[in-house]
Image 1 (tube, rainbow, N blue to C red):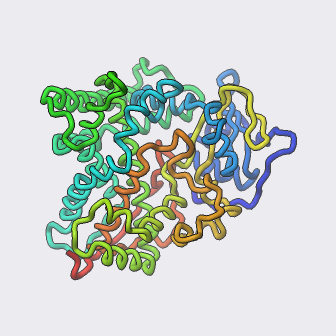
Image 2 (cartoon, rainbow, N blue to C red; image 1 turned 90 degrees about the horizontal axis):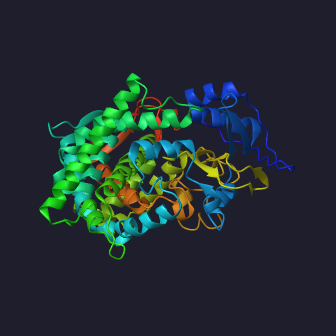
Image 3 (spheres, one colour; image 1 turned 30 degrees about the horizontal axis):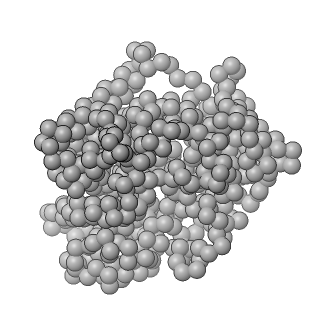
Amino acid sequence: MTTTSSTRSTFPADGEPPVPVGRIAIVRDLTRDALGTFDQLWRDHGDVVRLHVGPRPLSRTFTAFSTPEAAATVFGGTTWRTFDKNDQVYREIRAWLGDGLLSAQGDEWTRQKRFVQPVFTHAAVDGYTDLMVSEIADVLDGLGGSGEDDLAIDVGESMMALTLRVVIRALFGKAGDDAVPVVREAFPEVAETVIRRGLAPWSPPTSWPIPRTRRAQAAQQRLWDLCDRLIAERRDAGDHDRGDLLGRLLAARDGSEALSDKEVRDQVLVFLLAGHETTSTALTYALHLLGRHTDIQERVRAEVTEVLGDRTPTAADAAALTYTTACLKEAMRLYPSAPIIGRLATEDTEVSGVHVPKGTGVIVLVRNIHRHPEHWPDALRFDPERFLGDAEKGRHRYAWMPFGGGPRACIGQYFSMSEAVLVLAMLLREWQVEAVDTRDDLPVRAAITLAPAEPVRAHLRRVWGAP
C-alpha cells in the first residue's frame, strides 16, 4: 500500500488518543499489511492513535506516534531509558538472532557497547573500505561479464546479493566466501519468523511440532553453525585481527574482559542483518528513484566522474560525494529501512502530552514522520536538495531518522552509508539505470526491515567510456 501525506496533527487535550479499530480486526489488518494499516490510521485519525491488539486476555496495547517530537521523547534526551527494547518484536529477535547490541537492554547493552563501539568508529570503518570496494568491484564486473551492454535486473534481489557479499567480506575477510549461500538461504527464513511472531498477539511455543517453526529452527542452526565454525577457525589460527570485523570483535577488550564466542556470534548475526538488509533497501529505492529521474542521475554521474575519474574509490572519496549522499538520504527518507520502531514503557509516562501506561507498547512510525507535511513540504516528491547546503538548518533533528535516534541509534550507520555511497558511485560510473515502473511511490511491506511488496525492476545500460 502506498502512502499519502497526512495533514492532521491530533494530540488530544485529555491525553487519551482515539482507539479506532476493534481488537480482532486490528490483528487481521496488521498481519496482512502492517504499513498500510498504520498509513490508513494516520490519514484517518492523525498523529497519535491507541491500539488494543488481540482478544482479552491476550490483548496487547500500543500507542502509535507519527511526529518527530514524540520520537525525541522515546529515543532521546533524558527519557529514553523509560522506553525499553522489551516489546514482542525484540524478544523474538533475541530468541532467533541472539542477544546482540540491537536487542540487549539496560546494563548489558551498556557493557556490549563498550566492546562494539570501537569496531564502528569512522577510522575503523574507513579501514574496511578496501574490503568493501574490492567486493563491490567483483560483483559489478560480473554484471557485464559476458559482454552485455543492456541488462534487465531485479534491483532488490541484485542489491540484496551485493550487500550480503560486501558485509560478509567486511565481517570475515576471504574466509567468509562460503558463507554467502548459507546466509542467503537461511536468513530470510529466520527474519520472516521474527516478524510474524513479533506482530502476533500470541504465538505457539517453539517446542510445538509446527512445520514452519521447524524450518526456521533448522535455518537458525545453520547460521549458528556457520558463525561458530568461522569464530573457532579464527581463534585456532591465533591471528585474530586481519583487518575485518570478526578480528576486531575477537580482539576487543573492556579492561581484561573479552567477549565470549557466543557473544561474538550474537554480534555477527546482528551485523549480518543490519549490514545487508537495511543497506540493500536503501540502495534498491535509491536506484529506482534515480532511474525515474534521469536528470538527477546524470548529476550524480557527473559528481562521481569529477571526484573519482577512473580511480578505485577510497574512504575520502566516499565523504566527498556530497550530492550522491544527498540522493541516498532522500531515498532513505521516502523508504526508511526501519519504518516502524517499537518500545515498551517501563513506567507510567507521557509522550507529547499523551498518557502511556506502564507495560504498554509505544510505536514510532518513522515512515510517517519522514512523509509528514509539517516537516517535508511536497513530502512525496524525490528532491535531494533537501539534504544540501542550508536546507537542513532548522529541521527537527528527528524528522529524518532512518537509523533510529538517541543513544540507541544504529551503531553501524556510518558503515551502512559508506557502503551504499560506494555502491552507487561505482555502479553509476559504469551503468545507466532506467526504472521499469513509472511510479515514485512503490508498494512496500514490513519484514524485519522495509521490503518491496513486488519486484523492483530496472534496465542497466553500459556507459560508454566508463572504466
